[in-house]
Amino acid sequence: MASLRPYRAALGIESALSEIAAHRGTTFDAQVVDACLRIFHEQGYKIED
Image (cartoon, rainbow, N blue to C red; front, side, top):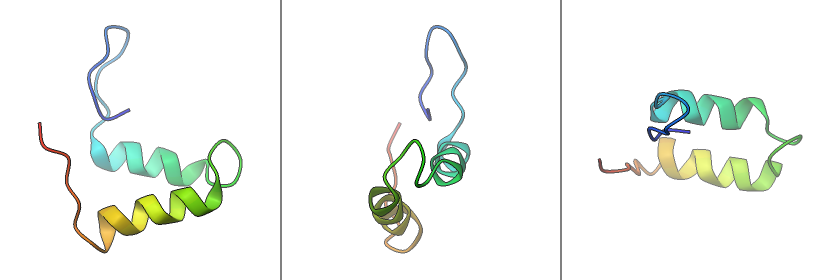
C-alpha cells in the first residue's frame, strides 16, 4: 500500500497504516495489526525508500 504500483499511486506509510488499522479484525488479523502498529508507532520502525 505504501509503495508505488503500476495501477495506483503510493499511499504513503501513514495512510497504509490507517488502512490496516481500519480493517483490523475483518480483513487483517487483529493480533497481527496490533503488533504491526506497535512496531511502527511505539518502536519507531521506518521503511527506507
